[in-house]
Structure formats: structure tokens, C-alpha cells
Image (cartoon, rainbow, N blue to C red):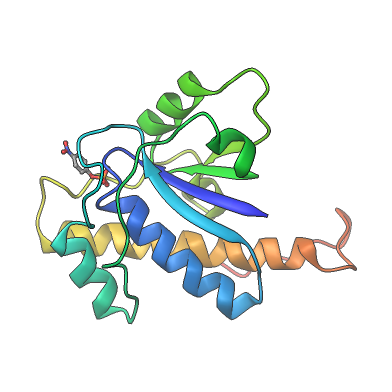
Length: 167
Ligand code: 4NP
């Protein structure tokens, strides 16, 4: 399994998602490649926004070493799952999708009960509370994602014994 999180700039939401999913995967014993990228080129080579770094750090997760990059054609071969942080970026990803793409493309919040079809609001032009709101959605969705992927990867999983949802 290989998972790529994608937002617009790759400096706020998708770096937080990458960090949160790394921690959730470790908790659930998932061994997979994890990365993030942006649909836009504005911030290529930049570290995450200081507010994203501070918000993740306040929850025990270090994301300061990440470097922003733009999604590229090979990502559709390298990754099994490309996870968009909102529907505008989902459309941006699908617009770049090569014909021979292998990745499954979906919204992050499709993994979170009650939020299917929704997006994580862009906190870039907001304040600390907006970053915290984004973090809260991202951490809940990445936890749900890791927990379900771990279950589906277990030998006993079948569509008929899918566990009841706890949230
Ligand atoms: P992100 O936030 O997509 O969550 O990384 C943004 C970062 C930068 C810009 C927009 C959104 N920008 O317009 O520069």
C-alpha cells in the first residue's frame, strides 16, 4: 500500500495529513509508503506553514522536515491511494490522471462517518482556530482510515465480517 495526500499548496493540510497518518499507521501496524503533494506549484521546496507545524507539534507530531512538491504523473503509478483534502483538489487530481493510472483517487473525508463528500476547509488565510479545526478533521479521518485499512489488510477480512463502525 502507498498513500499520497494532496491539497493545493502542500504546506498546510496535506503535510498535517501526512504526519497524522504516519502516526495512525504506526499505531495500527500498517507498513506503507506515505507522502504528500500539492496540485499547485506555488510553494515547491518550502517547509510546511509554521502554523501547521505548531498545530501538529501541539498534538505530538513533527512535520517540520517535510518539503512541498507538486503532484506528478508518476504518482498515479507509485501510489495505490491518492487522497484529496477537498473536492477542488480532487478535481485537480483527476484532471491530471494519466490514462494508465493505477491509483484509486478519493476524498479524505470519505473515510470519516458523517463527513462523506466533504472537504477540509483551507486554513491558509485563517488563524490558529482554523488550523486546529483542520487538524481535528484530519486526525479523525486519518485514524479512521488507518483503522479500516488495517482491518481490511488482516487475513480474516471479508466484505461480510466488516466490523460495525464505532463512531
Ligand atoms: P494548503 O493551503 O492547500 O492546505 O497547503 C494553502 C497554501 C497556500 C495557498 C493556498 C492554500 N496559496 O494560495 O498560496
